Image (tube, rainbow, N blue to C red; front, top):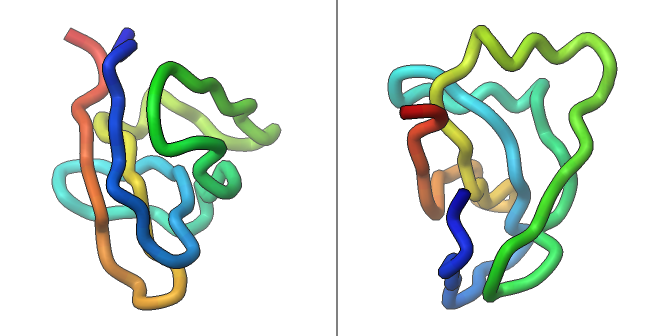
Amino acid sequence: MQRDFTFDGAPDARIGLGRNGRYDPDTDLGALKKLKGQQSYRLRGGIDVSKYNEVYVWCRKFNVPLGVAKLGG
């Protein structure tokens, strides 16, 4: 668990999942809740987390990754 998360900010920052460097927009979990510290997000039904190995902070406005973290291990 990452407790020391910090983010400088960006427009329309979202949280979602991806695999091997590819973000999946269908996994959008919502807006980034805060710029610092631990936070949690609820997975929507139908998202099979076993298919993903990364968590993304994604800029939906410009369609670019702002940060990526590996899941597990």
